[in-house]
Image (cartoon, rainbow, N blue to C red; front, side):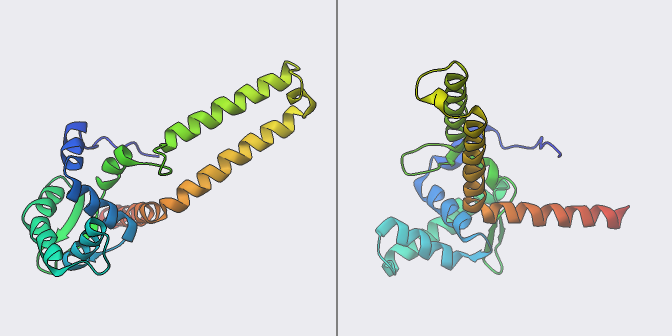
Length: 187
């Protein structure tokens, strides 16, 4: 596995996330998981902002204008999206993951994936230690069963995280394959 050295600096990520409309646009792009036109994205963002489906024309036009004039050029310059002005096609690119790391949330309660995994680890270790130290009730359960349950919880959480982020994972796999084939052609 190759470590990335070209991560977006935190200051740039915070500048991206400082604008609510830009955050909504990135959320919509990640949820779609493919190529979207500016018109489609503006309708999605306007619908999110107004809560109406379809959103009012005036709101869609306002979102469209701000995306084209401000947000999309900024995101493209930072490498967060690929934006073809001619076809008006937009797709998230490699730095979108850098931004997503700052907004990654498991549930509406605001728990991040890292917090979930830390909590699972601490609870699992505490229960296992309690069983090994013969704490009543907990020690009645075989430590191997407790360890198996903890590993199963980690597996379920990991599978759920992969499912939630499936479009991002698939895009990275495709990018990895296309990059490897380009390198083979050069060599």
